[in-house]
Image (tube, rainbow, N blue to C red; front, side, top):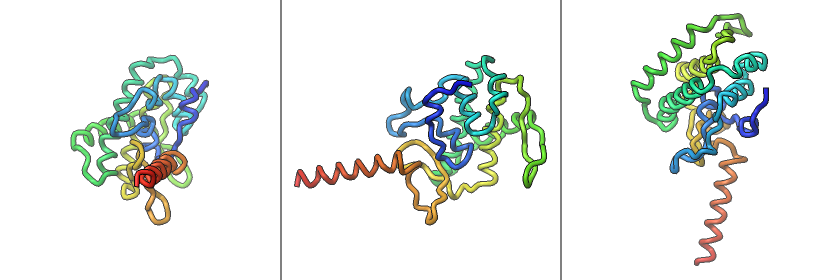
Length: 203
């Protein structure tokens, strides 16, 4: 299926499916999200992104295209907001709201009601194959968020110092501060360079 440029170019720097899902909304926390920060603008975007991260194959995405898209897209955004409400406080060192945890548990319960267990390597895994339901892309995302909460590694989850993204810090000394050095890390270096130049000019 055709993939929009902004979905195809979206970086997958979270280190976990649940975090990459949260990171489909970009921008900074201070100003709030702007229209261009949204990467799930249509149901087709959700399908294309799901193919990118491996929760749907091309055939399933093609079969789902053109279904009840507006309703499911709203549900996807609501699920993303819920995942963010649970994961961001943990990344920042606090506890998530109890009501958000309870709601996420209900989303996972509903997701697993559509799943079946199948052999994998080396363990069994959940698989969603109800190709006729337009909500199918949401189910592995709800379950992935619960998996991150229950299996971790939550101690490696951090907020980026340059944008709203969350990521798992798997660096050797766990000192990573940016979602990616190429994006936010480079921008921060440029800002520091400009500030130093300005300070030297004004002194």
